[in-house]
Length: 428
Image (cartoon, rainbow, N blue to C red):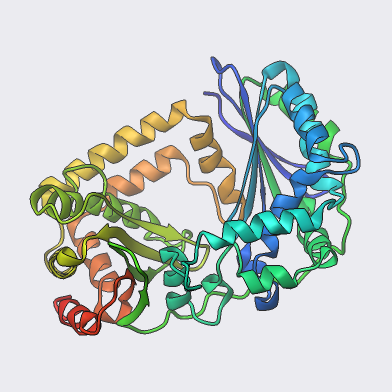
């Protein structure tokens, strides 16, 4: 792989080209500083609606069929995702059809016509319904945990919005959000694969260099992350299911924090293969759940460590006790030297494996330019190697405190459930 190169076009669009000799495709990824964090509460879900509407048609391709036919001519498929802080649009193109793929992408984000708005609204309302049960209660663990961690702040809003907020949105509101935020100076476009830097930048200048956006040049920045609410805080949601959904969350620093790599090591120690502590104890040794996941999700100035699983009602108490004791033990004693070396070895392997993934290279060299700075593989490895047992124990002492605990439980809640949870939480 050749070294990535970056060029900022005169209109403010940041572009990155990553030549990968031997690849037979070109991955195009456009990242936009537009997410649920940019929304007013009354317009919750508008960023996600904009992302959907981009694929309904534009000035050149008036409907979804014409747009999809154009994508097919590039040998490309398209994907899109709205998150808390950004929206990502991805295409994979044949090396001979990159210019056509860029033209399609340019029309997609530059000239949306927002046709068939009501039809797309109904699709999104159906998507929202998956987060609720038959009684109308929100049961999505991630959304419930975010609201518990960041009450009254956009970080606590669901990316998809609520039924009420999406029903209130107008086509004009959606178009205004697009005009304010889909501007070249708020975007980064990455190109990785079978392309040279010279050809890639020439195509990018020709396809995207003349666009200056449709709206005013500035808008209010997203609100800074507030201090996380003080715990322990519990949220129990009754649901007529035969299992409980459980998420335990602890707030922490953002992805620009000095300890970001140490947090990644901590995540691997707790959940990265069958020898990591949570998998080994909770699943392999005690057989309390079929599957369980843990990891750190970070924003630019805040983050959260989450553990999520589903569990049979009869095993809820032993699971909670095991989790609290496991996290407390890690906090109070830290990892063993053997655990740390195993986690670092997996980390080293994954750093090398990522060289074969176009998506991983985009994630490393493109995405950080939205809000942070690029950390090269060598820099990340050096920081990882410098993390010691004492560093991780100190980080765990800060992170896994009872005051930071936020717990969401969805399922067949009974009268004694909350008292049982409080007893288990006391072991942290």
